[in-house]
Image (cartoon, rainbow, N blue to C red; front, top):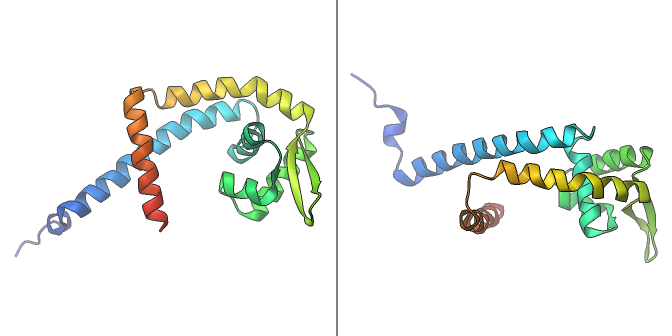
Length: 153
């Protein structure tokens, strides 16, 4: 007696879900390789760069806000901010309304550095997603946002 291949028993929705997961994972890996290579040439980890980028675009942020923006643990944010403080790129600032809260902010040296290196990073990201037209990128953004929100529920 021969056994049916396990995939033969799956329904079409499950097959599509599995295929989407694989394709999405491979695309993420390919784009991430390009962006992480750009980050590494400046001597930063992806987490360090994410903090610099968030502070560059958003201004000073509470450490909890930084954590939510870059999706690392609270201990991870503390470690990464400590490393950037030691490099003179970020400083901690007291929160005037809550003695327990601290802000992370770019120093002038951090501001100068990220302003200088971010444009090339944006070009690396653009290279990573160049396989899609502008309209396809808009569609992908809409669909992936919907997918992420539904998965988070």
